Amino acid sequence: QVQLVESGGGLVQPGGSLRLSCVASGSRFSIAVWGWYRQAPGKQRELVARIPEGSSTNYPDSVKGRFTISRDNAKNTVYLQMNSLKPEDTAVYYCNVIQYGVNYWGKGTLVTVSS
Image: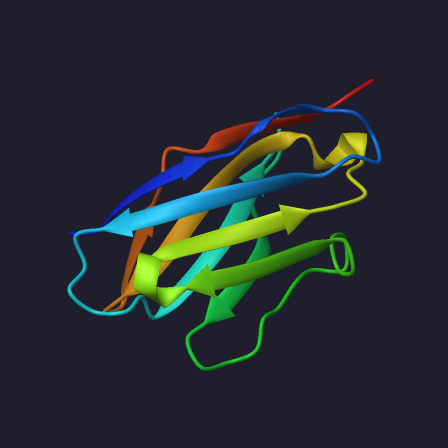
């Protein structure tokens, strides 16, 4: 069983930056796939960034060039650096892990982009 705890959300002005973190515990081995998803009010949860171990990252067009996902295997941690934030980036951001074919989710952290 993998437990995930996100941090780093908050209120930021348009054009600003935030860095989200997610720490995993309960896994004996390096996490296979890390991901960040988000869900805005009234919308479906969507993929924001994904980083499989030993493979390249991928992003949807909506965040490409502005968001960067990175992982620190030694710390069992994944980060999401978000730059040039827009009001439409406002959402609850969820950390996701796929380990041994099972999906695990954090409880989410709220990001609000507003002036």
